[in-house]
Image (cartoon, rainbow, N blue to C red):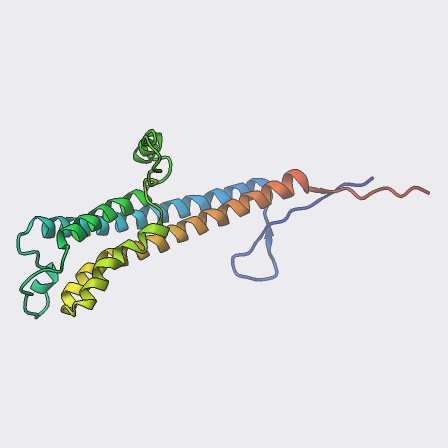
Length: 212
């Protein structure tokens, strides 16, 4: 029986044929470096998106407490303000504020204290099943479209249509950010699994001995 060590990872700075073969420790350091870079990028992008969500949520709160229910975009664009808001504007504004809060929760890591607290809450009594908190994107991608569709049907001006579309745009943006984060985590996990598999289970080739 013979043993032959296999080293699966290769690294080259300039793409030449003189590749540097990484040993087990170097592979671990490389994977850890990639994980740290991924975590840093995730924290940076998440913080920026959280700021955007907070500013948008603040605008919706201001809209909710205003009496005239006028879109803030009318002050930026040269359009005449509408004589009245769309029907159920207060309800839609409240719904969009709740959706903003849900987007903020979706961006938090599962180990965050707020997520752990919400997960520890007991289910409501009765036969009705409560919605999970935070609400998944499968539900929140459809809900923000109600108000802009109504504004389109009522043939409102573009500032009002765009105003009611902000929450839907943020929801789609957060969905793609979370998908990017998940894909990065899966790629790092695949590298770790590949390393563990090759170094723990397949680090040696053990050819079978042939009996004469």
